[in-house]
Length: 108
Length: 122
Image (cartoon, rainbow over all chains, first blue to last red; front, top):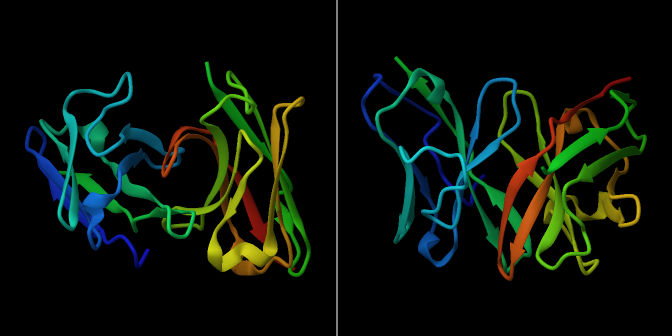
């Protein structure tokens, strides 16, 4: 997506912290949601409204949103966190859903 | 428990019309703040939002595909249908339906179906 910019890939060692960013002009004016998509599976909502976690999502997943960047932080990364991560918002000016291009997280 | 399941043809020829059905349970599309969206993902590529229908019957479409998409709901049958006309090989993708929680200008996809794979080829 040209609207939301994500780095295509990143890698992190187990136990370390992964910081995944989503860039967009004045993105902090929107509520940003994050999805995890493991290989061959449907996406799962892991953070909504910038920083809230759905029931069942570990506290290791957290989010923030400021200025032109929204961030998903995964603490104490585990092998099971290896997945693609997508940011998403609703563009009310176009009445349209928007996804970022996704970031592939590799756990070394 | 919220569940959604997509169904439709696995193979469609170019220029034909694709009809996909999403059957859901665990919620009602008559409840305020409830919506259903269709989202697709070409092989190896990112997610792309296509369309949404909400509890009031309002419909929203991806701007670039608006002329080819129609979304509708059957509240009594708990299903949502997406029609995509004049398909092309670039429409080859996994198509997902997702429950969408709508709070004014904020909408999120909190439950997803398993997806249905559609290939467009002659």
